Length: 500
Ligand code: M6R
Image 1 (cartoon, helix red, strand yellow):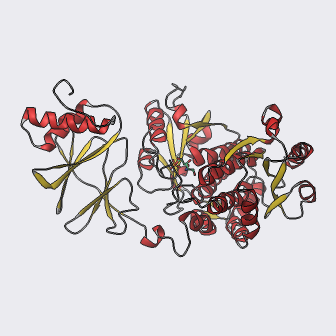
Image 2 (cartoon, rainbow, N blue to C red):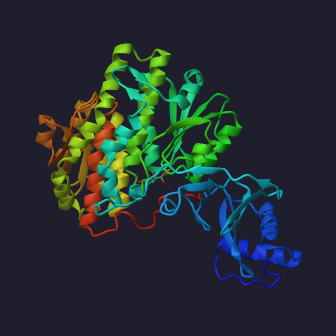
Image 3 (cartoon, helix red, strand yellow):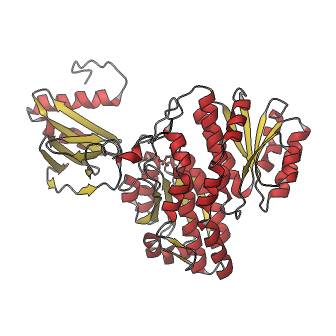
């Protein structure tokens, strides 16, 4: 293009594509739609494009591959966005454009074609979402609203599935593949960020209840490193948005190699949900705050139900323990509500440590991923450096950081690792680190060691992360708030990472 005299004003591939399309249009003397089709057959990579021809401004030409595109159908108008939430204000009817489709959009007409110029029938989906779900509803920030929604979102996630009295869990998507999951040599959880942390908790739960080998993979690593995938391997893709590019490509690669793909996804109709063989939605409602909160606890609720269902069916989880765990899970929404009843203590701790330049988050067992999640939340919302670590691993390096200025957060609820966590706390205390601990009521050992505590109700250790993560979310929120930061839109971050 440069040789032909095109001048580029940026380093973006968007500008290259635009000029490429223009060049094709000139050379072939064809309409924009035709030029787009020719160009898209020749380019590689993921894209969403929307173009307007100056000569024909009433028509938009849009196309996607790899990145999401949703078209809202209004009355003599159409709306384009990367997911349905911004559209809901205008219409509840949407069309999810597929890869390699071109949309020709006029105010009163939507035509879909494939790259072979064949018409496709647009499949109209009715959105089951209310406008209120994407408004702040009296809260100062979406993040705070979403933290406080958790008793309801976990309840919604369990509703219609878990019947603790009858001793049943109904999940049709999972039931369809239950035999394959039981027979699988291994399950691979594939995800990014907070969803990856949910996968780590699920690894512990699945191994304990189902006795199936589980691996948890960063989608971005998994997709590029030529992993060994055997026919019958079960991949569980975990994603709030359902549009994370690395997770999407990772499952598409695994599907081609014969793996069964189950999606644990929040956004209904999203790309990952559609690319999965089956799965279970998390039903947490739209999550607008960039920091994931309610999606995480809903993912844990869904993954716990899947593990309970499979473990019981497989026989690795006995009847009494199964019934006990169903009751425990049923009680989680109320326990989350009780944490949220008074948040002043957590706000005071956030104020106290808001100027610390760095912090360490430690946990063991089921609470180790909560330590990672606590560190991630604090980093993204308050820009304070934070490191999450398995508590016992700190002796292998991070303990060198500890002095009287370093806040060290222990996720120390009573579980089978508690005694060990207490001795880790003693090691920090001996080095004069400041200890902040997430504990259960009446935990005298932790109280005697910690400088500050955040108290959560007791729960079976398998469910504990759904409770111990709540103070971590609130702490990050109040720290960001105390520092005057934009907690809903932290710098440099996007809600859906639709590019690799
Ligand atoms: O939509 P996904 O769950 O696939 O997103 C994965 C991560 O991008 C996401 O969890 C991210 O880490 C959040 N900002 C964490 O709060």
